[in-house]
Image (cartoon, rainbow, N blue to C red; front, side, top):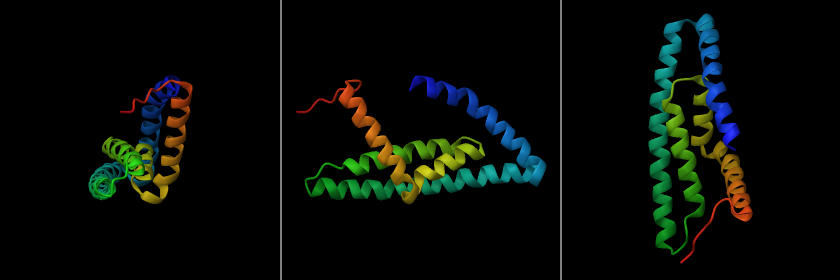
Length: 130
């Protein structure tokens, strides 16, 4: 997993620069800057909206005496999506919007749940219960 993270950290900025240059040649550099600012603002608004909605659902689950499992993974995806959207770049913006929209977030959330389950089963993550 660390290898994939390291590869992404090294490769993603180079890809973003390439997309910036390509987009700047197609639509002009000022439009690229404007799009970066618009996607950042839209992403911040959407992250706030989705975060508050998830917080409301979490409170409802807890008031009914249930553990908010789905909401925890929603919150993780929304947090990562919001942070990624604040970084400049079209590739990271696409990843951020995928994590913020509930329809596209669901498959990512399911993958994340399976990954955590495998890590728990292998003993990579230890869960303590009271």
